[in-house]
Image (tube, rainbow, N blue to C red):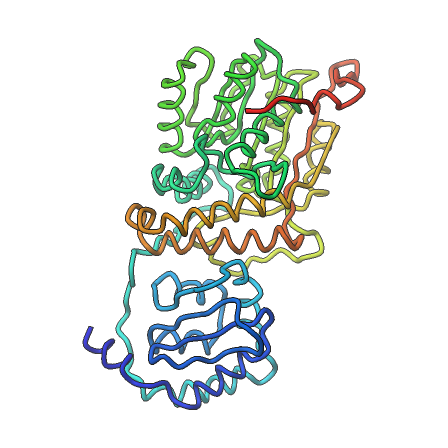
Length: 436
């Protein structure tokens, strides 16, 4: 620790400050950098966000650039704090990583001057990092199991700290921008049930059921039998507890099983997948929809709710904070590709809409709650995990607001042997006065 204290007592060299000014001077939106000695370098205009650099080692990383994951790692270690509008982090990080020609060479010169600063020992910083260590073929059964448990088994209590009381971990549906999250999530759950046109006595499968929110809502409000599947042991445990507390054990159950391993078991009248398809991957998408088709009874409907990518943006396979730390192996497949694969496997599209603005609002709720309950969340899962979830949620909100991410909610049907969809001619039954 003495080495760290000695290093942070030294003022940053002029060459590093000059390069830093060149780096942030034209960033839009304006950003400021405050260093450990109190000196500030800022872009032109009033900064909306301030990066607080606590150690010389963090300044070296900031000047060197590299990958998104490398910059994020410095933040997760606690060497750089983010103050102000965290939702602006996406364009700021992009600007820091996209250097003008020749700037990297000048960075090397500046880093040479920075060598007067003492080298810092490797430090974990506040909270241990949990990089996902996945092995085997991408989207194999065992690798998917590891990826899901890395994310969802972090701590049930952690999720209760920022989700709504029903514990819905997907986008809500807002009637207005200032609506409370709980009522917006109720509306989303109910709209899914309406789109599926659930009827008493029907059998519903929820693929990736989370903590059981949709199962409980559908059984309580629509008097159906609900089966949920998940790969997360902690989700299954809590979902079962909540089902028992609601007295719905006879109509709801949760299985710890991969969707590929589900037997036909008589089939299902309705199937829903909410926020799970992102874990499937494009390579496995045909198998996924083939499985849905196999499990769905003729005339049955399937509700597909998933984040989708912009087809104009090339898919990235470079290391990112989200892929390495939060959502390992996740893939955002464009809407058109998803629909094409589903229809090739025998499902017929009947309705589709993009709800991306709703997810941006949902994420802003989650970030605000994470910030308000920082101490509790960090005590539960560690400072690094709190920082990662906050940063990823803020970045995702920015991408939804600007159309880089879509949120597709699509309704498919499996026609019967005569080609009938068994659906009403209009969709007016989806809307009406129902409310929590």
